[in-house]
Length: 274
Image (tube, rainbow, N blue to C red):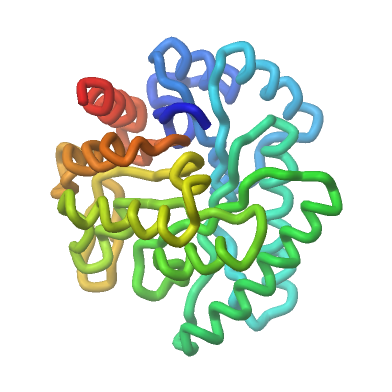
């Protein structure tokens, strides 16, 4: 990508309509991206996807996607594992038809198992997903998201390692989730250390193709509790934006705050003021 686009996690709150209305509203707000929220279900049909693609292209809006929450690539239950993989695959298929940029997902849970064993199992499942997508000619980015609870698989190191070992995979970096694990990652130096690590381990391509989530966050001993608006939280978003600016990152920043469009505009304004 050649710039950093700011957008909303789903249809703006001021819109009561459908995905098409959401795209138009994002354009009116002078934002550049919108995430298709498939978190409860994949609600876009194969027939509707090309129309969404046309609307997004006409309005110059980049689409990303959040796959359903009901995914665990570390489950020992065959039916649940198959369903988890299908949810990622179908999210990628519909998003690709919409000309989507990337699909993010929460990979699963440790379930009190050794981290390295969980990693190998998750890696194998994602490899199979990517092989299926390649066979179908689907080149969309697949993004394991950095998670916000200690029980969830998906810290930055794991997301980076998956990206190193599997083609077509890059991290979705959720800065709020990373902060929720113990209150770390909240200074300029810590934010830049994340970007430095991504650039060092994955190269310039990763820095120029970021998929980022940001919100305020309420957290406790177990990690993430709930999302908050940026100004109602302790997330040091001003220094976070400064780090993005100094590293000249490109890609998409999606606001997941309750006031999705207000915080997307807040971040964009801060970024442009420099």
